[in-house]
Length: 74
Image (spheres, rainbow, N blue to C red):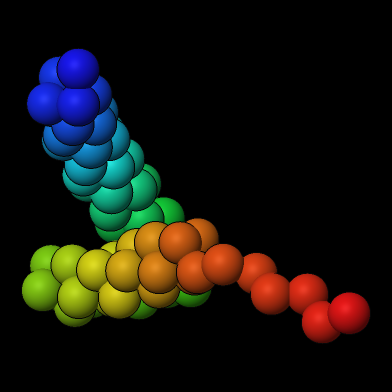
């Protein structure tokens, strides 16, 4: 049974990785939309490469901050 248990853990890890990747892509697209709308409200019209760069930095920061464990000092 040990082999089958290990196989189940492997499959669940792969599924979790795929779900995390899908959520990261969705987060990136939402961040691109927010950056474009924010720039439009501020009266700026940045080129697409700057919008993509800023959205990538913001999405990466949010993903890293969300995966970092919170340590509470006692």
